[in-house]
Image (cartoon, rainbow, N blue to C red; front, side, top):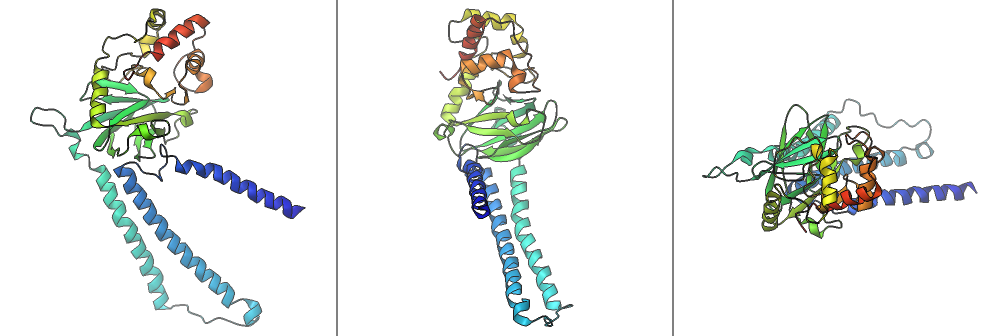
Length: 355
């Protein structure tokens, strides 16, 4: 009976591991399926490390097994004493030189890739007319959302980063409150967002996100920052350069615009209930708003970064945001009637530049 139970325990353990490891094959969030130059470099370094460590483990286990088999008591007897090799210069050289060689093999590519990723000298490059030659995005992490500013383009967005493919995108990383960490697992990273100093690095997006399961890459905060750390997600849309330029043009055209649907009641509610004091509905501007920019809310993949992008989820979030993301700074709004909530949700869903 006990043997049968032990077998079922082992089966349950293997089944649970299968569920967890299934996440390793998702292109939108797996480090094992790199979708960019930086991610590929990091994957290559990871594989080199795994191979070297596997060889070391294999050699150690082999020596261990040989020792157990050759020198077991049942074979050599109780009084057998193996040959003593204490003070062997040959062995001492072997277990000193081999680890040094392995460390060098690991150190050289590690240092190379570290300096390669840290080379942001082209970030400030401009052409003869003073126009930035490369795309730079200022990333500000806040409790518990992300703000993305494109300073050379004069636009701001939140929660969804949009980037062109097949070129270096440079990032300035900063935090507005506590330490966070910017990470797009499938593309590369991660790097800290600090409050007092700016970290800089670049990523290359070689795959269009539209081909992925949800049409986006998944980004995460990789630094424990509070009770809703696990819910501090953002999404990334990678587009061909021509489509990215079209998106930029559409974003720049949102200055002083209203929603694309005729929901004047929802717009009035938004303006008259302090919503507009924290949330901008135009993508033209700079960072520093109290709440996320909503200019592209209707185009987003999720509500609050993790809830389904539906009017029902949005209404639940508006009424009691603390229930879904504890510790965030958005106050609860319980005075709206069902009709007003419907109108407000319709207005926000109509804030789009892609439809």
